[in-house]
Amino acid sequence: MNHASLYHRASAVQRRDAKQIFEEFYDIMQWRRDGGDKIIDVGSGSGNVLMENIYPLFPPNFDEVMSTDCSEKMVEFARKNYGETERAIFEVLDIACKEIPEHLNGRFDHVLSFYCLHWVQDQRLALENMNKLLRVDGGDILLAFLATNPIYDVYLTLAEREKWRCYMKDTMKFISPLHLSDDPGAEFKKLLDETGYEDIAVQIREEVFIYEGTQKVKDNIRAICPFLQFMPESKHEEFLEDITICVDDMKLREYDSEKDDYNFITPYKLVVVYARKSVKSEKPKSCDVDEPNKQACSTL
Ligand SMILES: C[S@@+](CC[C@H](N)C(=O)[O-])C[C@H]1O[C@@H](n2cnc3c(N)ncnc32)[C@H](O)[C@@H]1O
Ligand SMILES: CC(C)=CCC/C(C)=C/CC/C(C)=C/C(=O)O
Image (cartoon, rainbow, N blue to C red; front, side, top):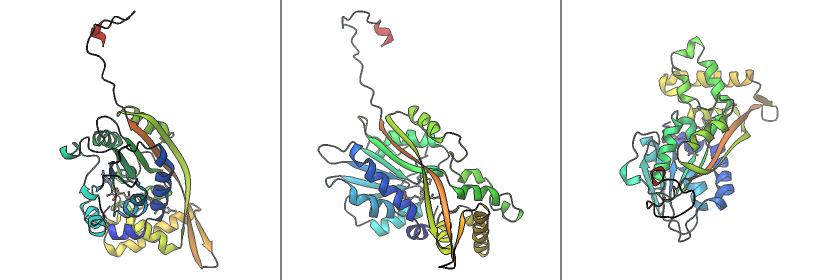
């Protein structure tokens, strides 16, 4: 995704969900007693959700928030628009990178990520990297991302059509890894169990968002659709029009006679995750503890 200014204007559902979830989980997050919390946001995009909707909700004595994204254009846009905000820093970070940059290892108390992980095919690696970002003695993650969304079914339909097929190769690469899962919650919980987390809460929320007006839904799709970059700009409007017709075929488009326009009903499944970094207590190295039935030290 690189359309920072488009996304900045067309991200209402993302703003709504991120704010609601952060407010909901605020009290169970492990804020430091002495303040000084370091927070990283993964996949911040244009920065508006983090800086305008989440930042004002941080505890007053937090130390720093790092806004990150794999897209240099997004990070540049966020830094340009929010770079003067105190205690806010901006860095490029691909959460599915092979190795977390050394200066980020074990630096943070909290990892946040909203509407990003459905863009990441290797979610196991992403969770492993998030774990490395957290300080060695603990920390927590708060995530929200899509399991399913009707836009993915639209992509799969249009990718079969002769006129769009050549622009929509590797369609599955741009669809949430959990979109076709029978049990997205169990699948993701298993990943968390296997990547060093505990006190895990995974919820699959059935949500609905209504885009009022054809232009509004096209703007939102234009902001996030990964296939437009592969086709000439002269075909964009036709592609977007075909999407709205496909949505109509799915019975998700409703005519509003008062406005002489359409509303677009979007039922989606949102994965909401809270978890804490597992902190293995150091087992005593000594074997001189005289306890009954104590196993031989070799098995410590
Ligand atoms: C839909 S935007 C979400 C932006 C913001 N978090 C929000 O809630 O609106 C998804 C962002 O995730 C970024 N992204 C996708 N894959 C990523 C990855 N592997 N590492 C970091 N960011 C990634 C995209 O560049 C894009 O800016
Ligand atoms: C009815 C219908 C298909 C509406 C389009 C909904 C829409 C714009 C979904 C975007 C989902 C998505 C990938 C969001 C994101 O990553 O922020």
